[in-house]
Length: 116
Image (cartoon, rainbow, N blue to C red; front, side):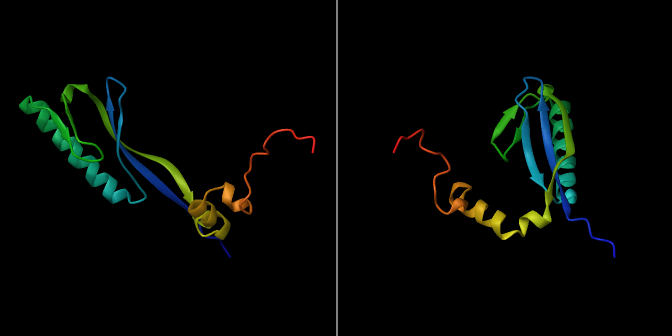
């Protein structure tokens, strides 16, 4: 029996700027949502450049800048989520309570050398 692929792809929509202050507009496993956001941004960028007005974003940050500062708007795969890990109770406990608290509530630091 063939085992199903338990990896889920995560995509990112990025606005790359000439000043290296890149903006991650969206990260999501939903490719269609990312693609629609990408298309919308391309349209806004094109219109702003044509009209000579600032390129405006309201999410994830509110900002406006010259469309000439944009070098590229792209949609790329950035990582994969292992679905087995997501359903792992130890992993879920670590996400909820932090790594140190998965160790029985002990501090993972050893408090230094002691002669006691």
